[in-house]
Image (cartoon, rainbow, N blue to C red):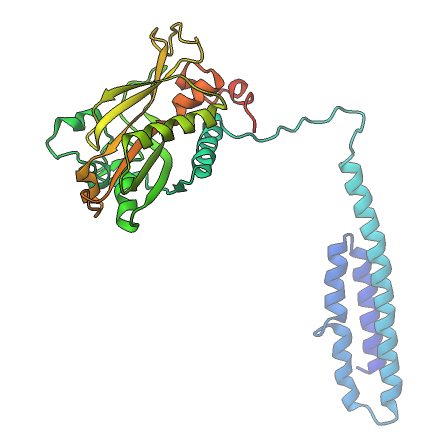
Length: 343
């Protein structure tokens, strides 16, 4: 078959297939088939080697003219089909601008997150560093290192979720204390925010999981007076006013002496309500001077150093700040409740 016959055959074949092309995608396939590196037009170039010196310029021009002709047809068809497809797409995506718009809701922080962030900001402004501990921890860091003996009745104070004999869901963020003591030398001024878990009966005042901010300070000559001053300063900054507090002696294995701090109930102004059980006061945290055995477990000499610690309940403080009388509202995912809170 002569070169002219091959050119005519390719042209006719192209025009037939072009008539059948109904989409821009099919045009692209045609382009590759005829003008690609392995396409029909490129294959004609192999015939030039068999042509004479005089025939090559003529054959080359014929091949080039075919290529330009096919390119022109493809470009025109592609423009036409793209316009048709765009028009069809717009018709299918017709928007009635007279319809009311859809309301977009802004995301919000959970009230517990808001309260915890405020607590962290206050402590950081007072010079405390922030450390994070694991939710699943060993018996040593959660109990034994904090002066809970294996057979001591004080372990009954913590209704614990055990995973194995040695692993458990932490019952307080105090599990960070010994970890920090092992890593740093005094002076240590630190807080540890996070979740805690206890197998308790759910009520308006308690839940099986809650949030706590552990605060502790270790240095030479740290006293109970330092603890009182720190707690009062923290509460006044958190509530942005002077808060009436009440401190009561209490027992915790990891502090000696220990105490509990109550705040006059803001919801009932001390008159008595369901949240404060009619007492007018609400317990918000336990505190005390770090027990010498805890300092020893962390590798710190209790003869040289002393320290204080406090575990502050985030939910209790959030309830007072926002005047909420039931802790269960934080976890019920009621959007009517949660949408009230913002930065």
